[in-house]
Image (spheres, rainbow, N blue to C red):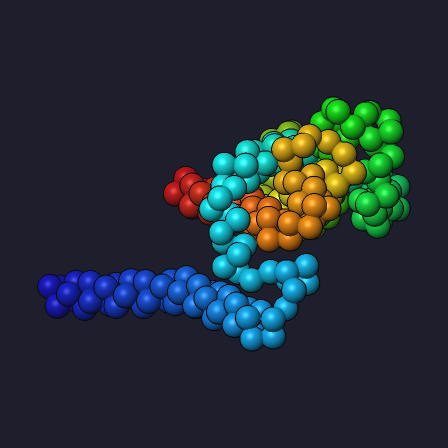
Length: 272
């Protein structure tokens, strides 16, 4: 018995070691690749004497990031607030629309062309129209632009998840005379949750991109999108790239936050 336990403990330790090694490689490999690419970028700019308006050197961009870090952080808050509001609104609308479509084939067929139309609406053309309707001073237009970009991926992934429920499970709940609300909370929604998070991970980056594009056409001076256009218009290209770097960090923050929420929910669900 003791030898069996010892073997099991050794195997568990070996498994943890392998997982930790795989995890470290998963983290270090992208970092190493990023360092190599940045070094090649810096070397190429200096070797070929590339003009800053074409592409500035990473060292110049890093200097602008450090010098303007408070401004970049405040701009990230402005843009992130609109992106977060749009993400929440679009996610709620997408999930509710998917629930309605999954309950009725007729409604599903009616919603299909609407969703297809939303998926091809150009944000560049939509933002000026919404600014005309709601005004450039209010955040309404920017939030709506972000929300519209979120609805489609959340809707499609949620609808796919809702359709993954096996008919035998629904028949079993029907045999127990379970109420529709009970069936939804115990069978349908738990099955669809992983698909919902997949849609949210995709939509989180789209919300940030849409909020940035919407700021190009108006809005608060402190937003990252507005700051990028202002710096580029003033021929301060390194500063413009510094704001682009802030936008990348903001988008990654949204993505990591949704991924962390998904991991937490998965672990919490596994322990209950």
